[in-house]
Amino acid sequence: MIAGDRPLPFYRHVSPQPNYGNELMFQSLAAVWRIYRERGARRLLVARVIGHDCELAEYRSAVPGAEVTVCRLIAPVGLMQTRLHAREVGSGHDSALARSAELDGILNDATVECVTWGNGHMGPVSDVALELVGTANWL
Image 1: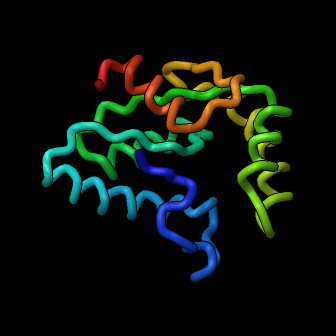
Image 2 (image 1 turned 90 degrees about the vertical axis):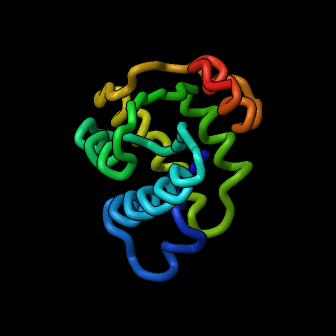
């Protein structure tokens, strides 16, 4: 699983990244996928927000031959913000809280997902990933 919101450690401290670091993320994804593919990987799960269907072409370019399936995890905004309080600290905390409510609206309008997944419980993200790959019959 690749956490696409932070493709390289501390990249945002190196130089400003417009558009939430999309360009750097897709370059990193292409490089990492090439390495894993050469070593036999056949599947990839990327944890990242997709706010517009035009981004799907960038995923297909970064991961040639991929069958892209977008799964949207749905939880109430209040629960998302509770989770963010627990994991985001320091300078990104307030912007992450504000962005969670903003993204909920954007994603409701975008409807790029193929599958929606209710994630209203407080389980760890690793459990959610296991549920998703199990549902996709990847295990």
